Length: 424
Length: 151
Image (cartoon, rainbow over all chains, first blue to last red; front, side):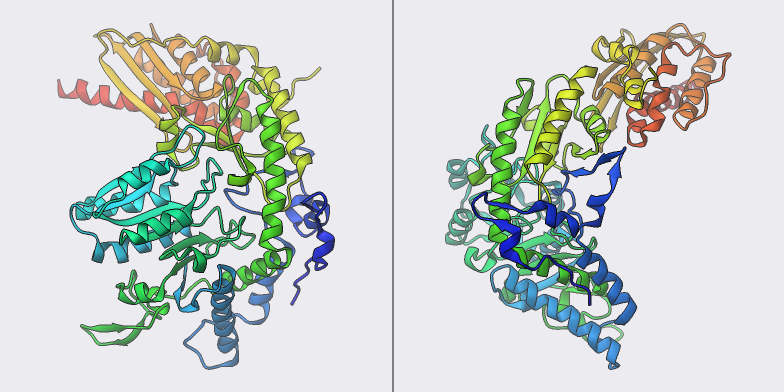
């Protein structure tokens, strides 16, 4: 199996510069070799999805070429190999997020489905009229809409921790909002718009003392910062493979086994049952109880290579690298007097997400102009319309960094932003 | 020197409409109004129109919030359509939708500044910006037609 990785970790990371050797990392990402409009691709849209290294692309093709068989329901060699690859990843992920119990790892399609599963399964049996669900103003639609649906059905009340002007959570307001009616607190660890790293440890601690169940949206944190579900002691953690070098179509819901055991299945079908009669059925044990139908086992195999890749670099090193880029990008973007930069502007509490608004150029126009220089950023509301409304802007431009970006990419962004002014 | 795609996209006429959009006040005694949204990007138009007994547009206002392309397209629409009969309006609208798919505008139609938006079709993700006001206009005309039929 081809697992080509620049394996000499110490050589990839330069501790004196606190930066990864990006030129070597880029060699592992075939898409970064291509050109866009005749320019080198400067990919600054990893908060939307990350690019994939060769080892992940090859693992997917290797799986289909050599192992492919449906899992769990066969006793032939291929099915056994396929099943063990699938189950082995459960263990790997459990270790990756802090050494939690692998029985608590449920495979889904994406973070959105993971959060919906909590709302639909845990929520429907535990939330009643008048109960409060506490969220934040900075959530992605995927951590807002499932709760809106649940509240409509149950009569629960939604509350939101406000966001301050510097893009952090108003913690004083959090303590005031938390009360005996608060049954559930669901918060993103890292904001997909502001890059803010939220004090989730403190939030979980207070929520648990209050008797509330805690859910973490880890979509923007698990790929970028050490996310230790065991130490955080969260009840649920949701994230996606595609933002962390893995394939699309795989999400993870981690839930504490004792809570998952109490939950009703989310979908019914093959694979999630113990016994089925015509009018009755009993459920399989967790986590299989939540995995109805043929799962996306081939992409799970490719996801395994993504985790190997990240572990070989080290999540701590990745965070250091992104901190350096964040410090540099914030400094450079603040030099523009016609740009409003959102977020904390402090690398200690900000991941590599830079959201800005140009007072003369609409984000879409900006994005089109940057694209002609080969620079990929995102323009729009970033699935966070309530946050846009709060800041009274229709949309913003967002650049986001990962292991294959360096300060030169930020320089190119800055140069292209300067050039964009010529049209307006 | 030949203009590149971007220079064509952001040419003077378009930027003029963006910076000084026409038809940015609410239409008085309007006969129909409609809001149009682009849920993917948050762009918005607030369109109001007064159509008289002879099926002629007397006033057309398009309050836009959005990128240069969507604002300019709405502004051109507001500038061009007053005084025109609904039949002509439909011809212009159909021709504009076709132009956004890469087909040339027919010569015999008066399309004001609209031909300057031709370059947008080279930027696939931006076609929806240029069409927002025109899609809203289509909906207005459907409503207007229904109301007329019910009278």
